[in-house]
Amino acid sequence: GEMMAVFDDIFEFYKKEFGKTISINNDESTVAYIQDSSLKSSYFNDKIIFCEEEIKTGDVITYQDEKWIVITQSDKYKNYNVATIRQADFVTKFVFYGTVYEAPCIYMNQSMTSRNNQVSLTDSKTVCVVPHYDWVDNIKVEDRFVQFGYFWKVTGFDFTKDGLVYIH
View 1: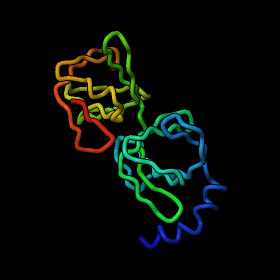
View 2: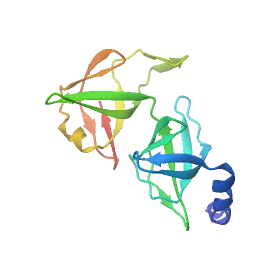
View 3: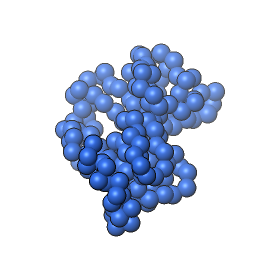
């Protein structure tokens, strides 16, 4: 919109004055301008990222020593890209052929509550959102993974969002 067109002209200023060092998919560092999302949800910590580098859904951003996952398609403007990132508070682990694979993940649950960084899952129906790494294609229904010190069983998948996999 019009605000973004105006922002084109001041992006370099914001990046210089307020920019933070990030890495995208563990590649070399770059500087991005990151702001809180105006679409505050009740549980998730979402932010808007503005950067020159191309970013896509499922990319993992390291920002302030924490992992964030790009959860929306990136919009490209004159000299920067914009997307929404969500904090990936957890790491999930799968084992295939004796090798441990891990991915930053976002856990979603209708009954999820958080107090003092302790997560309470009052319902066993949980969705784990992970970047669509190549190894994720090895996961099958009935596979088990460890999270929160418990074994969880895969009951299904959703591959409809490019770059992300929703594991049920």
